Image 1 (cartoon, rainbow, N blue to C red):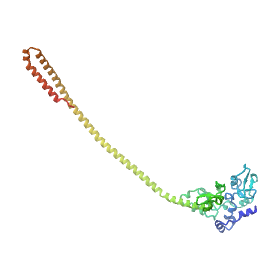
Image 2: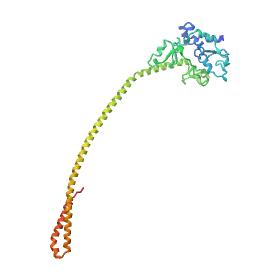
Image 3: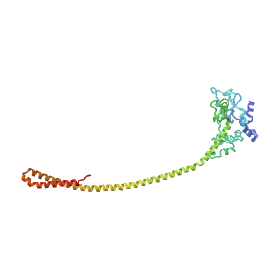
Image 4: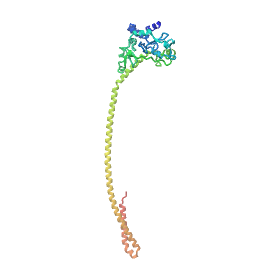
Length: 347
């Protein structure tokens, strides 16, 4: 256990750790303790509060891990788990709080073991829920300087609820690396034993910083694009208002034009109706005259017929006496019929 503690307390050799050591010569105040006081499975910092999911636990083999990872490790009938480092089985009843780590955590404020995710050289003071990143007091205004990122919700880093990281679906190991070719997160087994061995692979934290930087750049571009949206929106609204006015004017012109046409048609209609009524009255008067003339002609024809019949039925002397008068009456009736045919209505 002492060798394990020494390995956990050893100063990391990463460039970020070297910068932290230069900026903070006292081990208790810099990020050098982060690796020693972080879970070996999920790499998240421990907390010492009773009942906390991040409280450090110790297995029979001596390896530490946090309570959250302990609950996620495979178990046999919920009675034992395998150590993620040495695979030694430990009964759930034998898992205890790690005494040395809890003691160290009690001596160090929580905020001093949370490094800034942007510069890695200062202690984090805030946690951004949108960026999912711890930030120091100097980096926070830099990251959230635009209009979009400035609206992100940030809380004190001590109030952050740490969640166990996503694990590899194939090996059930924590995602620690990023494959730049496939653009996916991978675990240690994927990097060594899978197709990603020949791919360009970066540590997850480095890849996350790069992705965050690209995302912030995209957000800044988006903010710049959004600045022109109000002007474009105002232009669209102006065009819509202009369209409404022009459509109203056009509709009024159409109504006025067709009202004028309708007025002309009504006047023409009234004129034609009046003209037809006058023509009807004139023709009706003519037809009355024709009826009277036809009645007189019918009477005269009947008189002429009777006179001719009596002349033919009588003696020769009577025929000679009445013939001139009968012929006169027939000729008069024939002339009257000819005159009526010439003056009759033809349509």
